[in-house]
Image: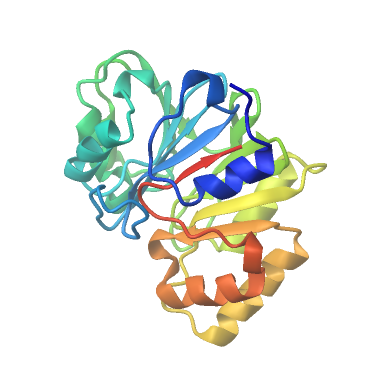
Length: 263
């Protein structure tokens, strides 16, 4: 079957639930939101927290695991995803709404790489030091596989790292909560690939309690940095989504659990 042009396929998939396509239709990179408090597909369980899966690289990457095993365990089969396909788990920061779903994956179906911030306190590390887990305590940027890195730890009210992927039209930057500041995370991502524009910024923007003036300032800052598309979700806040939708227009993506983006 002949594939639809990329831009048409992308626009259509913004309205699609998390369903797998036929093998001949699968593009090179697929992002599925598996846990979120905003909802795209109402058949999915929704809870406060965030998790998304990235497929199509040399390694399949799960970024964050949501706030509870219940939602992640329920949503994986609804998305047609077998946990055995996961090669690497990246946890953005220590907060429970991003690491609480890890128990859903136990026992790990095979040896997996876990990339966790080195700032995780000692009393929290034991829950991840399980059989078949190859843990890397991340301080500096680390390459996960060709075309995918973490930013390394970024200082903030909560230390955090983000996922940076080279997509066909530029960088895809995925954040957990963006406690260090969403623009700060974008700058860290751009430093890893200075020649690449930021095509998509997706995840928690941590602007839940920000007023409209602040939100417009942040949006203008992201535009000045060259961010093309935004998909604020999780802790971004309703007003953030409204303001960013107004400012980014057709380059705003409504994101939430059940969303599939294919590049």
